[in-house]
Image (tube, rainbow, N blue to C red):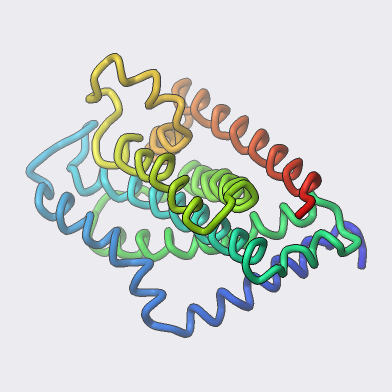
Length: 249
């Protein structure tokens, strides 16, 4: 196999597993239920009676839900699957023993996580197109969505490699992913948070995703946030590859 395609068997394995899940109606429903609940509780509850950043609240909320859904699904699928295959099924060790590079393993896992994140995001986008009149899909929106999926799939690999048990994976989610979902500008603008909390909020990568994904064109603020996301993504990819390279269980 050409070295440039060494990641493909890993990606294909995950996609075959994903296809089996897609055949179950419960999986598709579970990917949609939480965003729909948020749309009902916040979007339809406040609806067009509240305006934020020059638009109605529903139009403000939908891009945030897309960002949050892409984060959750890109991260959780990779983190859980990698943790289980490493600690319980012992299939990850086969990848380590195979004549492929750590970066190829990383790419295969990350691309698989991105597909799952994009699938969940697409469901929210379809719903958003039906219930909102705002034109939120732009080239910048698509680029940001792809980058967000890539970033959090990398984080999922890191969690899956570092967690010592399946319970540890849930702990990482509760401490890192859950706070980002609620305090990174998904449901309200970041400028509404208290001043002393803002430095912490701006450290979180989802904050910068929510900033860029709502912009119709790239301005100075959007450029800075986009660069922050790129730096995060590259650092997480490098660290994840390093963890795989040093894996010795």
